[in-house]
Amino acid sequence: MAQILNGKELAQSVRNDVAAEVQAWTDSGQRPPCLRVVLIGSNPASEAYVRGKEKDAREAGIDSETLRFDDDISEADLLGVVDRLNTDPSVDGILVQLPLPDHIDDRSVIDAIDPEKDVDGFHPENLGRLLIGAPSFIPATPFGIVEMLKRSKIETEGMRAVIVGRSNIVGKPLAALLMQRDINATVTVCHSRTRNLAAHTREADLLVAAVGRANFITADMVKEGAVVVDVGINRVDDESRDKGYRLAGDIDFEGVREKASWITPVPGGVGLMTRAMLLKNTMNAARRHADVVAP
Ligand SMILES: NC(=O)C1=CN([C@@H]2O[C@H](COP(=O)(O)OP(=O)(O)OC[C@H]3O[C@@H](n4cnc5c(N)ncnc54)[C@H](OP(=O)(O)O)[C@@H]3O)[C@@H](O)[C@H]2O)C=CC1
Ligand SMILES: Nc1nc(=O)c2c([nH]1)NC[C@@H]1CN(c3ccc(C(=O)N[C@@H](CCC(=O)O)C(=O)O)cc3)C=[N+]21
Image (cartoon, rainbow, N blue to C red; front, side, top):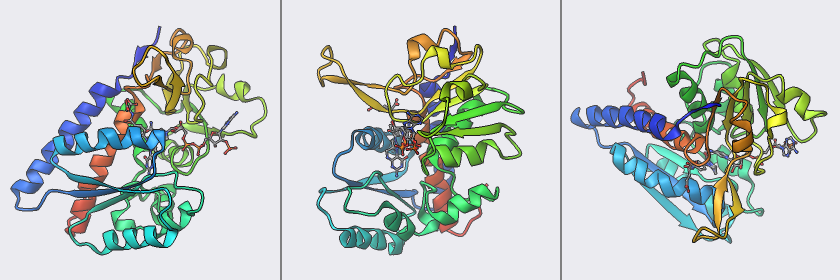
């Protein structure tokens, strides 16, 4: 039976660390780090993210606000919002929630964010830097996954890591991070065109699912003793809940926990770490912004 990689506790300890950094920062006479989140319309995974982010930020002493816009905002108007945040000297970090509505090109918007304020780490400059091992902002979800492993003293040296999902926000940056010299995993990235997916996942010492389909990874796809990380945030109907749904990951938790050595739950896993690492990136953005080098 797997041990639980407890996102609640691990994220709390990251948040405590960030809160102490923020405290030292403001004690030295600086204003609190300032994050602005842009949310267009209502996507379930984005809503889940935004909900908790505000509370986390407040607790850490970070000034965070979500700017909400209707689905029908034009690309030009959204670029205008980004530009105002870029040039506003009181703003340290900018995060535009993805996905954006179909009539807006995600890439144009991400490219418009000042790389120095790109706390998501999605700007090509930051993703490029991550790939060459000179990161400035590491995307919060991959960063959170690696932080979870580190804080739980899970040895990654020489591990076979298999990532299911090749998105620019999770799969690709995670692959870049896991193959770095301080982590030293051997990485395979699978996607919807992968032939015989289970043959790959069964080889994994570290299996990460970022697919977006509830219960996609079943016990028969997992090697005995694997470390299993669930990134998925999916809504499944549940009449017993007031809301009529509950959140579920991409991993069939009940089945897979019998085989894995470690497993992350959903909720209470990677999502909480993502939020905590965003705070860390925001603290670092404030330092860079004040022309002080981040540690
Ligand atoms: N917990 C957290 O902090 C976060 C959670 N999420 C959640 O994680 C999930 C993934 O997000 P994201 O990476 O943005 O998703 P995307 O939809 O961008 O990517 C999904 C990936 O899964 C692959 N895929 C789809 N179907 C299959 C299949 N049958 N077999 C193998 N691979 C498949 C796709 O392949 P292809 O490229 O070929 O289409 C794609 O690479 C979502 O549930 C999202 O809500 C996302 C970010 C953060
Ligand atoms: N620009 C951008 N950056 C992102 O990092 C980004 C994004 N857009 N769009 C959406 C996805 C999804 N995502 C989540 C983060 C935390 C939780 C989270 O906190 N989950 C809690 C549950 C929250 C609840 O119960 O509602 C948990 O898993 O325990 C969920 C989802 C970040 N994403």
